[in-house]
Image (cartoon, rainbow, N blue to C red; front, side):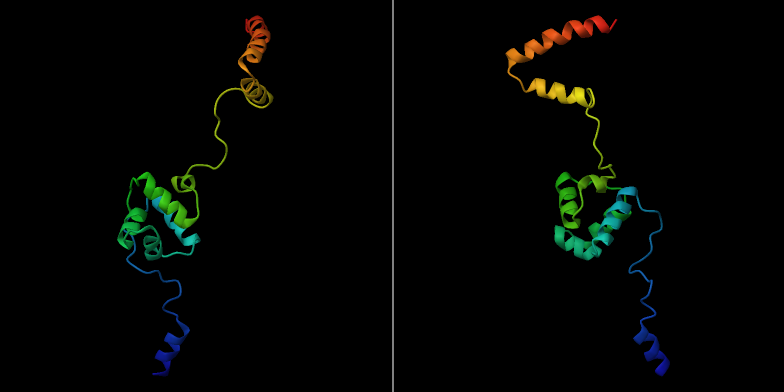
Length: 136
């Protein structure tokens, strides 16, 4: 009797044990990112489900199966976990290249595009012959 109370009082059965049935197949990448973000937020599947208004089984399904969430669902999940939707989708948070010139040229072209049309034409009149001459 004492051994039983010792084992339960130490909680040795709870250490390192996860709840639920182990998965038979690996999680899809979205499911991995979702589970990681949920765990980092300190939430169980049931708690996340309650926050976004779905059942715990739905959250389990999202974590274990390849899914395509609707945009509003993805936004709710990201808000509930205090992460960006991009991070759940696996996108890098760095700047995307938007095309066009880099650095000072981009700044100059942006500043020139903010000028009145008559002033923009003066910039074009200066640049056009220069570019034409040096592009050969």
